[in-house]
Structures are given as structure tokens and as C-alpha cells.
Length: 137
Image (tube, rainbow, N blue to C red; front, side, top):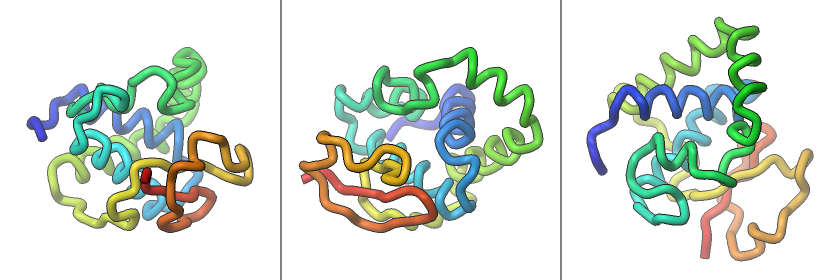
């Protein structure tokens, strides 16, 4: 996988904030694990091998569907965003090595979304907080 850039760190922090700020640190690390697994897989349909490109791939992460809302939420929750920045830096620098989701490459919150059709080709791996994690078949 390519070296992680400042843009990767920013995109990961924004994604963790937008997707998992209400989850435990383990759940936040799990979401990061899915992103890293997708980058490692280096598939065009997931955005390729750069973390930033995976995070910002259209249609992949709900938090990027409304960037203005994401920016406003970050402005209003700066302390929480700062935690996501530190966690992203720890993950991408290798200081944080936990991987509670193994080779999972999908997740969702079934309490909010149920089980969308695109998850029918996936096996459940682990549930952490509100997020169910999956591995594509």
C-alpha cells in the first residue's frame, strides 16, 4: 500500500467523525479497518489503494453525501473531531495496531438501515456497538 499522506489522514478523520463518532473507540477503529482493507484490496470500485480515495469514493460512505453538513458538524464538534484526527494519525502511522474486524470490507448500522441488498453477497463477521461488519463473498 502506498505511503499515507496528510490528505489520507484528513479523509480518514472526516470519515470516522461522520460515520462513527457515536461509537466506542473499538468501533471507530473497526470502521478504519474496513477502509484500510479496501485500500489494501486496491479495487477501482472502492477507490483504489489510497485511503483518501477510498473514503471519498462516491456512493461508499454516507457522511460524504452532504459535505456541507459534514463541515458544519465538524465545526460544531471540534473536540470530537480532534479525537478522530488523533486516532487517524495513530492508525495510519502504525501506533494503533488493533484490528477488531479482521478482513471485513463492509459495515452498516442495521438499526438505521436494515440489511440493504448489497449486503446479500456478504458474510457477517463481527458486531461492534451499532455497526455490523461483513466480508464480501
